[in-house]
Each structure stands twice: as C-alpha cells, then as structure tokens.
Image (tube, rainbow, N blue to C red; front, side, top):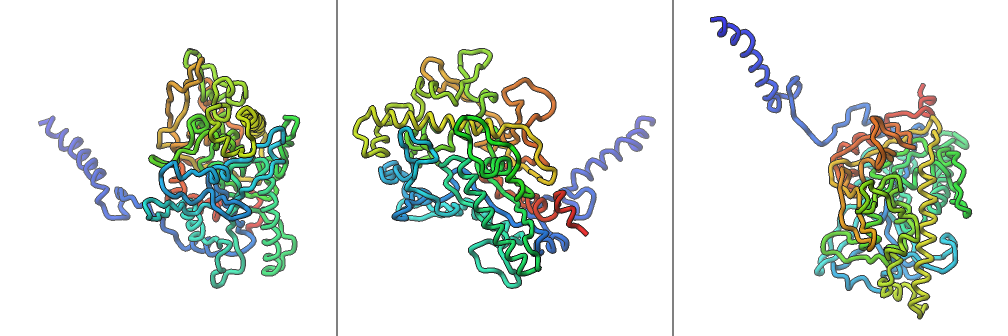
Length: 493
C-alpha cells in the first residue's frame, strides 16, 4: 500500500511531466514546451525601421572578399584568367592562362616594384563553370551581398531605390595574389574615395560639412587579414630592413566595426599543402601546379606561424616544428618553387629565359622574397596592442568540419607522411580563426590572443557556407544596425 502511494504521489507526476516536455515539439507555439525550429529569422517593427533608416548614424559598409575571391583579367586584352572555368581537364590550363594567373617573377627586383600584366576585374560574385557545352553558375559572394541589400544597404552600381539618396554598400575587390601590405595601401585609397563621396552626400542631404564618416568592414577569409592589417597599420608598407611598421591603429580612424569571417588569423595548413602538391578546386577539376601558385605572394603570408607546430618532423617525439619561413628548408626538400621538376611551368612563365638554370635561379629568388615578406607580415599581425576603445571587432568562424591541423614530414625526404585533423570550417581551424596562442603550446584554461575580440561566434558551417547561414546573417545585421560602438553611443539622444 505504501509503495503504491509513493508511485501515485511521486513517480507518475514525474513521468507525465517528462512526457509533456518530450511532446513539446508538437506543442502549439507560445507554450513553454514548444520545440519548433525555423532557420528563417523574422524581423519586427524596430528591426524593419533600422533596416529602412538612411542617415549619418548608419555606417556605410565595405565588403572585402577572400583568397581567390576576385576575377582576374589581362589588362591589355581583357582576357579572363580567373573567374570563368571552362571544362574539367588539365589541358584547359594553357600556357597563356597560367602565365596570366601567376605573379611575375623578376630576379633581384623587390616584389612591390614588379609590374604585372594581370589585374582584378570585380568581385567573384558568381562562379561560371562550363562543362560539356553546358554553363553553370555557382554563388560565391553574390549571396552575402544580397543579404546586406535585404538588410537595407544600397549597393553601388545598382540604381538607387525610390526614396533613397546615396549608396551605403561598397565592394572592395583587389588582386588576391599580391602582398597584403601593398593591398592595404590600395584599400586606404579606396576608403578615402568613398569617404569623400559620403561626406558630399551628407552635406547635400543634411547640411553636414566634413562629417567624420566611419565605415564598417566585412572581411571574409583573407579579407579579414587585410582588414586587420589596415586597421592596425593603415597604408604603411612593411619596412625593407625587416623591421615592423608602427602599430598606431591609424586605419581604425576610418573604421567603426570590423566583422571578421572565417579568417586564418593564425594561418592555415592548406597553404603549405597546396604549394607542395598543387591546388585543385574540386574533384575532377584541373590541378594548378606548385610552380604557378607558388608565385602568389599571399600564399606565404597565410602560412601558420612557427608556434602552432603545424608542420613537424615525424621522427621527433616532442614534435619539433619545421620553420616554413626558412628558404633553406624549401630548397632542401624541393618544395614548391624550389622543385626543379617545375621547370616545365617555368618555361611557360619565363618564355624569354632560355636556360633551365637561369629559370630556376629566378624562381628561387622569388621564393626567398616571398618568404621574407611573409615572415615579416606574420610578425606584424601578432603584435599585441590594444585597439582604440571605440572600435569593435567581431569574429564569425566554423567549428563543424574536420580541418588539416598538423602535417608530419620525413626528415630526410620532406615527404608528408601523416596528417591530423581538428575542428574548423574545412580550411581554417577554429583556433586559427580566433588566433589562439595556445595552439601548439601547453594548455591553460582561457584564450590567449593578440586580438581583442568584442565577441566570437562559431557556426556549424563550412568556409564559404558561413556567409550563407541564416544565423550568421541574423547576427551580422544585428551587430551592424543595432549595436552601437562607443562613438555611436555618443550620437544617441
């Protein structure tokens, strides 16, 4: 009798409560147990008013693409070398195309003094692929741009909507092959031009003369590195003597908020992997050889720092790191441009150089210059100094896909004998995105990073998929439209 009373009094009510909770997914909306999930955000009256607002309290946005994210063309002829992909066989990689795609190599000449016949031709908004006579278009940055337009930003190069008076969304496209410090100087000139445009419009519409226009930056992948370098150093170049530029946050004078998306803030292993093995965009696509992609300056600037121990010797129980920025290591193991077997491509890239020895000498010289600049760039990006208090920096990154973490090489041959994986977005580790200095070092409880993040958000999405995530878009618009920086708080009445 006692046992039955206990069953009725305690056990059965608990069971019914559990069943009610479990049934929550079928409960009507508004109940405490409702478990419905909808990936499509809804915007209320206040959010819609924020999206519709046009005025000086809403910062214009500059969207900065990542590696491979701009179309490239031959300057003189307009012939495309990147952005339209015809066929899937390697025979389509003609000498003319590879020569146009590679960065020019000139012996003994500084990288920033070498003129190139190829230049950027707009953001890679959609990828055009032609296979067996059929043309396919795949979204690249067009989706992100459209989501910002849906959020109320007015895209340059489109007609102004009725009732709108000026543009508030700008694409910054650049040559993603070339040195990031050099590209930061071009970004500075771009920002000054857009700032002058906004000041003119603010004076015309609101009578505000010489208004202190601030921009919000959205940098995806390598575009996040470019954004960060610009904020830290502005248009300063990396000094020729190997020292570092002055970290005075001069670029942040024009930036209120920076959204850093899927960025390899501590490098990523695929840079090394691809410069050794070549780049293949997808299964069955042509292989872009090491002798070509190894000419890109930026590949080296995105290699992981030594402290991450991303490339180690397989026979060392302590995991001694390989110094990827040492030209002697590349020559010893014949990696990338230091591989004499790449001469078939050097003949394409250097048609006027008749000697194999001379071509190889030019390639090695280019490799050493790229490695020197890259090591200097990585040091500059890891300097710890607090940014101005009125600047906000938000990180969005992926943590749901296995991503190359560590490569073990044979000490004698330099061959990669083993690769390990950890969570990331498939290209960039989650630890690299937040620039966690604990990677490769002894563990301790809290993040240690040279970057002072305002907030960090991880999403179960791949490298490009992050920008397609409704969670990303919802939080991005909230951060841009609703969350004030200290400078904006002073404008609130």
